[in-house]
Amino acid sequence: MSEPINWHASLAEHRTAWTFFFSCLLLIAIAVVKPDIFDLSSYSTPPARQQTVVEKAVSPPLPQVEEETEAEPVIEAETVTAPVKPAVIDAAAKVNTKAVVAKKATPVAPAENPEPASSAPTAGYYVQLGAFSDKPRAQGLVDQLGRSGLHAIINQKSSALFAVWAGPESERKSVETLQRAIESKMKIKGFIIHHTGS
Image (cartoon, rainbow, N blue to C red):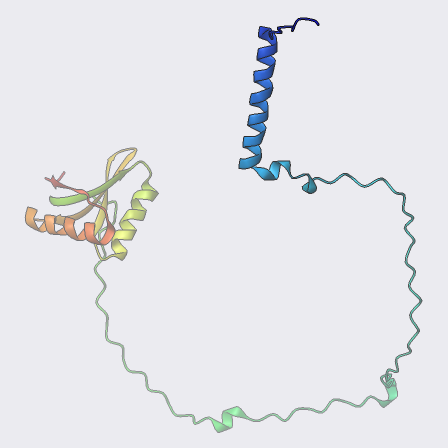
């Protein structure tokens, strides 16, 4: 009899065995967590190409239906009669014609001309609401304040700067009240300035 052979796996064989073992273990773990990956029924093979002959569908011709329509009678030129004149009612005859007496209009006192927006400001306290490089933007704010019932003017600081001032008020307390009113109506805080006049 022969002696038993003691076989020992080499290091490379050990690595291969362990790699195979962990690969199988990884596949099993994936199959447990995401079994739909291994569901092959969702994958379909493309059908074999078949040449199909498409026949043109020909519908039978529709039966001709003759519609009976009444023809409008032809009017000959000789049978045309003149149109009937409408009856005219004299509207002036029905209206009472009383003499209208106009009352003499009372003379209206000319309205005070509001101070032009770009006039020179008088001395007093003002709330400055903004300074603009464009006069139309400054005028827009003045108009917006005017619609809210507040008086505002444009003071031209330089050739390219237009300040919008609301006021004037003679006392600081009254201009502080004006500042709070503008802030509540227009949501613009502004700041108080004292103008001594120019």
